[in-house]
Length: 394
Ligand SMILES: [Ca+2]
Ligand SMILES: [Ca+2]
Image (cartoon, rainbow, N blue to C red; front, side, top):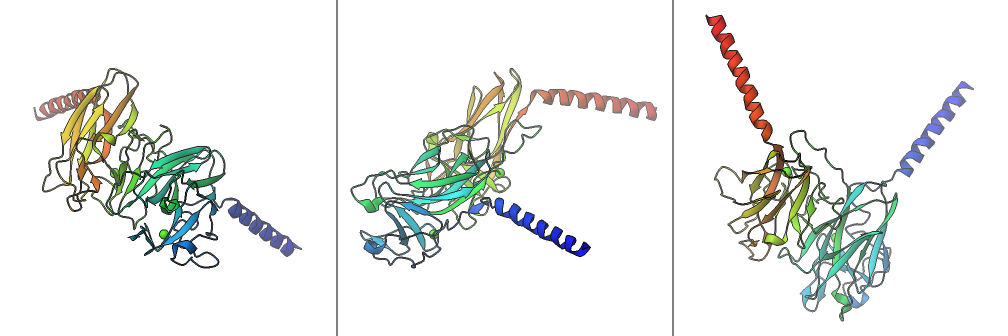
């Protein structure tokens, strides 16, 4: 009797555990199901003849309209199609979409990373949405010579079950001119606490979108429309053009594993509203460096803090890949805007067309008024120590 009750307890425990895990299969950070489009459809990958290339079913995705699985080596008009990663990707025809249902946690902010390439010279854009949140990403600007880039977009989950949708809003004469997408990943973001001695949130830029270890292009952060929902917690990309989130595996980063590379001159601006006490002296300090990506010098940033603005040139030092820059300002209100953009429009020296620029990291805003008090106290302590010394020696 005792044994059977023990067994039934075990059974109920197992059932409970199973129920727990079954109910919490929440999208994990990283690639979504078949996010790289390398899982073969039930009838195999379509042949490389474009006419037969219409997907009959892409595992883990729902499709609407002309969605085509494309393969490495496949040609279009004499040009080989770009496949961002692996051997396969999808191309969205006019007004076509793919979607996948995801389990997330309501109220949290998630960032979606995806790679996109355009196929024709026409204006192409891609709409990414988790209804009701939606953003159209402009693919017209080529940020690098390889013809594709990873992008990040963030949304706040309004429920536990959401649908991630990629849609080509285009209506081109040539229906095969739609964008190619690949490598779709998701990451639940957290907002780091504000350090005691620094008013900047995520000033070290370590919290940001998912990055694939094997992707050497960084991740582009396009304009974020909602100040509160950003792939780079705390920060806003307030310009029409994107900035690049870079990692220490593929770039030179001043601090930690992540930093921002500013692109496109004035057209790529990151900013943050930091909490300040009105009419107090503050100092903005940050690391200014180069990304180690053969970017043509000179590199320089325009740094803003409240009503102060200063251009700072990166002056290479043989011992370091970055320098520390300072900007003193007096706060005018309980929030002060800090911002950065690149002064020059830089490209790489090896291909003359990939966009690059100065790197910003380790951003701090601290109450420099307190510094004087600190030295005052230090002076008192030293003075007291001196008199104690004189007293005992005497
Ligand atoms: Ca792929
Ligand atoms: Ca960093």
